Length: 211
Image (cartoon, rainbow, N blue to C red; front, top):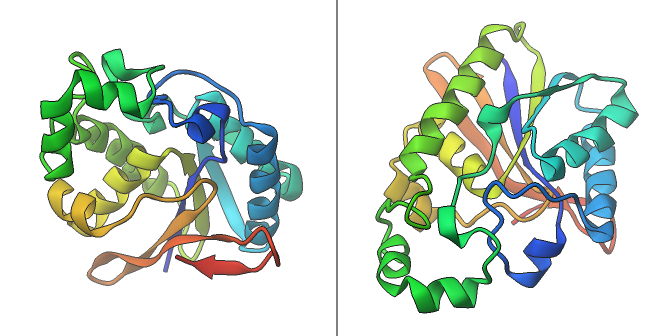
């Protein structure tokens, strides 16, 4: 039985300010690095055999925290990048709502619209992140665990596709992964199942919790 942990990156300054990042390449904030260090401590005893990360800095920084504890080499894969949000990149959420109200309302209804005029749809993200997942699994030995360090929307898109949820089902039923939280996919005879969602480390007591 193989396991894949899908891990969202730690906080960035843009996260804290409510700014759309998409594929803007920004590093973790100080708080994000603290989150990554705490989460890495919780994950380091999971027997991780492979560590694959988006090549964007915030995910790579997060993966580096686990690599430092395990000695694993981080494999970078651009297919694990966050959804490209086109003209929204660098804008605060309030400004996106003001400029693109119809698109935002459609997204809130669970419709898969193009982000930011020339960005991606979730279906576009699913194709590339699923290809990265399939390549990883094809080379993952039985009973081994791998960690994918990626992004919020990319994580939800991947998990939904692997377990057979439509985008709309996933959007309306799964809250987004919190910064430095993760999902756990476990392989069974009939396919992959979601065993945990939004698991992370509480700042106050350092214990693992599901939210």
